[in-house]
Amino acid sequence: MSTVTFYGWEVDYDGDHHLKAEQEAKSGRLYTMYHGTTVQTARTIINNGFKQSPDGMLGPGVYVSRDQKKAERYPLKSPVTDKVVLKLQVDIGKVKRIDTDNHPMQKTWHTQGYDTAWVPPNCGMRAVPSGLEEDCIWDPKRVEVADIALAPNTTLVAELRQLISQRKSQSTKPSVQGACNLCKRTNDPTHVAQPCWGCGENICTFMAKHTCRVRP
Image (tube, rainbow, N blue to C red; front, side):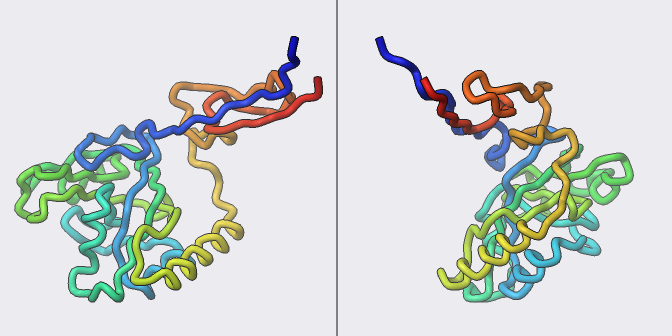
């Protein structure tokens, strides 16, 4: 008869965090998105955070996309050697779908209580000739740089990732409102911390990984 000395689990959570561009976003979630910019601006964003664009197709805000190919197009007139695609974690808040030209809320969605405007892919808007998905986030604080998706060379990737690491180590940014402090997922469904049945450590059953070892 053997004694069990291992407790724990590991799962691969995808959920709604990596929805494809054509899938409609659910309000109040964290999503992986992308933003294309120049090399120097990428450094500035990583060090100081995003700033609102003063205007655009969807009005002021931070323009991002769940479609990396969309982000790779920007800045439109920059050479490939000066393009960086930032991989982001975005707290989208309340989402408004904008899918027609001259939509009555195309630039006023935020005044109606929305945090993000979403343009679905291939919706037929003349303002989006590429047909690729696009989002506008009103509050830059909802957008955090998580990694580098694309850069001209490996040296630059290493440099920018180092800046991201330094920024995270200095950050005092609180957890996303409504998120569990242990699993970092939004409390949907609601869940609470509890002691691990093996080691007694405080855990949440929605954590992607937990390992403990106990003596027989």
